Image (cartoon, rainbow over all chains, first blue to last red; front, side, top):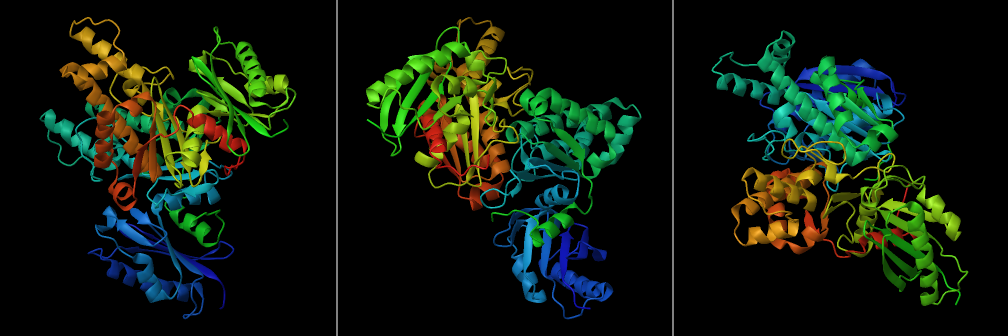
Length: 319
Length: 319
């Protein structure tokens, strides 16, 4: 069968998700595959190539048909104009990788790339929780904390594509280094990893030994009335409230979209954050502006649909 | 004489500055006048009206000639679309003032309004320190802390005009309320007023009594080796460094412009802030992006020239 299709890929630290989607938005193929170990660019490109062959067969498009375009989203510092990933901690990529060129070479298709949170904000704006909004902040609270900015009706990437690093605003708490090289970043305190770290530090300080304390376990302990756990959870909610109120004060958005596993599963935690935002942000941006704080609707495919929007030119894009 | 001219006015807490400027950017008239006390909107409008009569006479334009447009800039929360000042602490305006309508009524000219820091970033972009830059953050460090954002080649105002409130990002330090209603804002700790407050608190704690300690006096004491004064100054520089690194991480700008009395006069202080920014911001936005941190060039008239740029349509403006 000869029809137009687009290939969109989310390359994560543990899974690679590929969708083939036609011009009308119908999903022709969808598959998850483990990220190869070691996470070398060449191995990942190989996995994508095989997935694409399989996908075309399943989707019923010609084996030698080329996708109209391929869209990649990856967590990390990304130069979208030149198709370079400067650093992607989830993939253990520390040096620049020209991933678009590599993939263009093996597929013969044009490839675009975007930071995963940038892609996610586009997904939520075009197909999800932020439909109809012109000024949107997207934040994902998960293992790490990522952000995407949709300002004045466009994705805002900054001068070189590195904008929206909401996880690395600061200072929250004291004396805690962050993997970005800075100190006391929101991510270092209020992400899943940050919560876990706070718990282990506080347990050590109190000479308790509970071994590894995941964020999930910590939330459960707080639910069961453990006061130390509750203290840490409340501190993280407070910091996220401060962080989001900064975004309100800087961007005066009409919509904040909360994504990520923690935001998705913890209504009481989200309520605490929301209360803090409305208490701390300047009043015109919460009272005169009608501000919506919403849960993401497209997870875990927000990035996929954002890249689809980019590929199909549904997005006003100055770049 | 019959020629086109524009009227631009900066309404400050102590002074009102008016310039009449022709279409070629020549200043035809410039005068400062004390802000009337009490700072009632009607009295301020009256002062502007008299200044305009005087200005037209001095500029040699017909008494009954109307300006092509009037541009106002004022510190405060401003809805530029509807010409409303929601709150202006410097003018003791706590309730909404429809200042554009009032001024249009007495002058017969179209009037536009902008937050003073928004106007200042436009001034610096078009005529000052940030010429040629597309992504610019302007911050003024003075009695208060204000900010203006120029993103993707345009002034970014947010959904209702309240964006760019850099003075109210947080949390810096602990337990200090801010006049915005929030807590631990950058302004509450690192503005002139914030420095003064820190000094007085620390002096009290140490049972010293120096009476009122202005920011200027504090800097002098630090210069003379007073360790308490130096501690406060360093803490403010550190917080400003954190604050600016947040802006780098969120906006990935190519230029940060520092305005305001403190930034203008304290090179060593600015150096400390800069060092902190380059230590704390994510590396791609300071190493891959070439980031300039510059002093404002147009003070105290940056806002004036920004409004002139807006009036004469030198600015791409979606609103």
